[in-house]
Image (cartoon, rainbow, N blue to C red; front, side, top):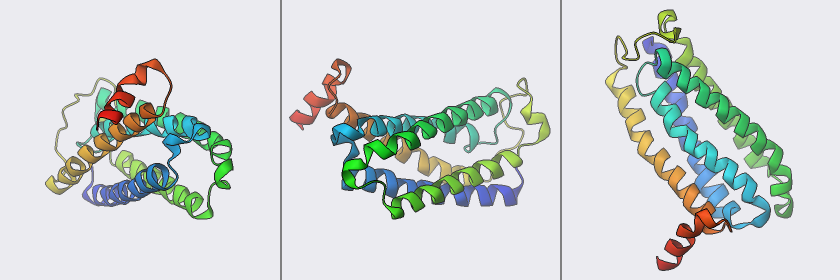
Length: 190
């Protein structure tokens, strides 16, 4: 990646992750407790799927310059994330009806988050050299990202994995499915 594209992509990615933490952890999990509201279970599980997709997207497209099958795997994950995001958008009206709908603030925040994510991805992908787009290109990058870029992504990754785990645990803790029994038992023991 060109250094200017890497810098811009990393800054936008960092802003996206910080604002996503506010939206996902504070607004969705703490303030609105979407995981604990029966009418919001679908929305919470869609958020959970997206939270589970984000760490591998980070690892495949941002940790090192993507190439070959790793690049295409990252793009496939982004495509799945986009489909899940669309279902999430469709579910919000019913999910938030009892709360008076999605607030103007949160709606605006979602627009900003989408813009930051798409811009970070676009810049990262624009910097991928043409030869790296071949499915059969070696997956080991010819050159690495600058150390500070790799460091930023390495700092972001554990937090995204933890956020995904929290989404799963909270979703299972209030779910009635037998496969989530472990979370209810663990929640009572803690």
